[in-house]
Image 1 (spheres, rainbow, N blue to C red):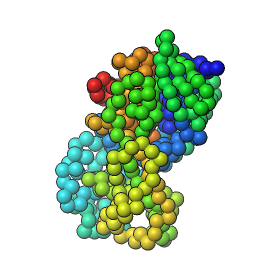
Image 2: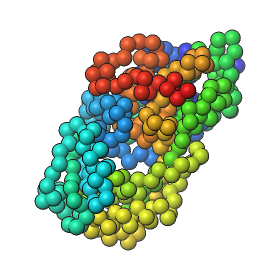
Image 3: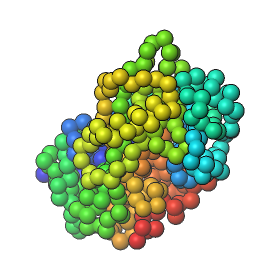
Length: 364
């Protein structure tokens, strides 16, 4: 027996969950998740930062348009961000300044006051972004899943889409939990986006998962690290973010890999920690914990959102590139309007988003 819906969403990470929640007030929705719980991969392994000046232009626009939702649900904890420029990163620093909104350069004296453990000979220049924050990912992700359920939508876990076909104008997806049918199929499968696309008979979009590793390192309590800003070098070779009396330190790696259950590479972590210690006077004597997530990109770095154009009623929602959490409130509203062929929300358009920059058709 097949379970029939108006829209089937493959993937219950932040992209699929948020879109399904938006659509569930207007359509009958079923979300199919390959893992035993939603958000197992990238969503559950995010560094959870709200950085409106981080990423390509569509991402920045969607992040800015998401701020109101984050504030309304109480998902943000204010934390300033510092971007520092050591020698050799002048070009990256200039690019960062050219595309920013609300950031400003600060003096090296101000930098030392903001981050007293930064080694005095490391940075030549610095930028402060006062509009950044930590994100409570659980509030956001679980909130969307609760909205889906409240509107009568269904989440089915342990339901990998092993076979996908379109017959007589209807999508049929086979899983170990049974068969599911719908008029519209949404591909929000994260790193597995091209795998799902190929199974559905669509041309792949050139999606490349890239591993990002993070180490949790202890910090002496007397340093008061919880009050420190997020800090990153302009060239993105390392970053550090306070969390619960410790630091999350990352080499900001972007190693191309196949889609899989990612784990941190010890050598890559060691290199990142060494770069961190060259910049920050905090001894890292041990790593308490480490993990890795997959950030998936297409060639131009922009996300992919829209109908396939060649495969009927097949909708792409992939390639968020690690920005999925911070863009999810606005991106889900935008995607829902495109699924339903409704006008783009005015507040998103006002942020300067250009639809052709994220359309699947741009990739061939």
